Structure formats: structure tokens, C-alpha cells
Length: 89
Picture 1 (cartoon, rainbow, N blue to C red):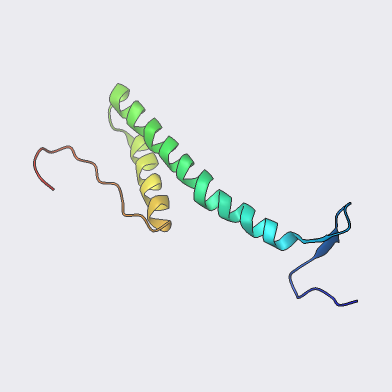
Picture 2: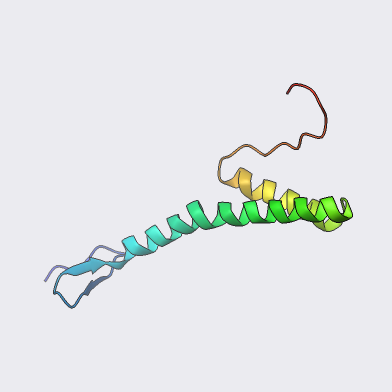
């Protein structure tokens, strides 16, 4: 019987076919990176904005906004600009 390549682990399912579990791990990591992290960043940004409207800017809201910007730039998106001035970009 041929052994799977390094890093891959075969297991048999009840139906008798084999599955490569490494692919599922890669898909799970991809789903976290593509779905969960941007949702968390949006939630942190929204929370920061809500606290700022009630209590004004403080150290905690600035830290939340800066961390959301840092995580957003890790995933290849440009940093979201805050427009507090009027006029064109």
C-alpha cells in the first residue's frame, strides 16, 4: 500500500473512501482568514465608533481603531480613512 505524501494523513470514512484531512485544515484556516477576521475588524471598528460618539476619543478607542487598521492592512486592503473634514479627497 502506498503511503501518503509528507504532511498528509489519510483516514477512511464509514463509506470506505479515503479523505485527506490536510485539505480540510487548509480550508478551515482560509475560512477564518477570509470570513471571521474581517467580521471581527468590522465589529471592533463599529464598537470604537459607538464609544467615540458617546464619550469622545480616548486611549481605548484610538487603540481599537489603530488595531483594526493594522489588521486590515495585513489582508491587503488599504487603510480606511476617517473623513472629519469637508471637501474632496
